[in-house]
Image (cartoon, rainbow, N blue to C red):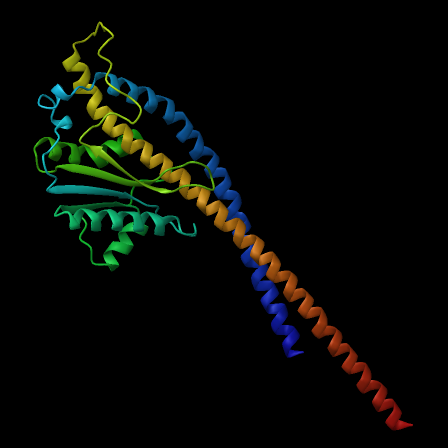
Amino acid sequence: MAKTREIRRRIRSIEKTRQITRTMEMVATSKLKRSTDRVYAARPYAQKLGEVIGRLLDPELRERYPLLRQPEQIRRAAVLLLTSNRGLAGAFNVNLIREARTLIRRLGEDGVEVELHAVGRKGIAFFRFARQPMVTQRTDIGDRPSAEDAASLVGPLMARFERGELDAVYVVYAQFRSALSTPPTTQRILPVQAPEGTEPTRAMNYILSPSADEILNRLLPLYVRNSVYRALVETTAGFYGAQRTAMKNATDNAGEILDRLRRQYNRVRQATITQEIAEIVGGAAALE
């Protein structure tokens, strides 16, 4: 009897756990839909903005615009790491932290002085434990990052880059390809470079209004802020995709464990009943 009570207790415990993981899976699925909508809404704008930047950029402009400055040697760089505030998402945050550590180590081996700016409780907690100094620690960016959040993150870094205090700025984030594929990605956002696949177009004549200088003065900071905004929304979508997958796996595993425990409970209960019947029969035979 003691064993059957123990099995029943385990069954009740796992049923409650499965109920929690199933609920979390449903919540993550709902939030994933909203997050992916923001990702898909941001991509066309970012693509067109990148095309405009790619057509306007020219090597001769590097001396005129601070955000285009190409240092001869990178001596000081900033790494902006984006992680989530919550866990229960498998290896999602672990992969991002590993990507950031690899980048920091690689830059350090090249003689670059690296400063870390961490966003999200998971990344902050790890680097605190690792005793890695952090210049910025942000946990106030929620599930719906905005352009203002991106500006608050990268604005000070742009100002320091323009003053020559930084030679490069990198962002480490989760690139959202699908709910099952969110690989950690490193992107250098400063100095500004033309997106891959675009080339300056000199054969076409443009009529620019306002002037080209004013257009670039507005577009270059906007392009950098938009790059960080895209990294924020893609990381958020990637987190909910990873969490949904992790909770679904946990729910499925709980179901398999319950099936095994119920079979075990039935076998133990059957053996107990058989033993009791045998004892009754034996006692009746002894009384005859």
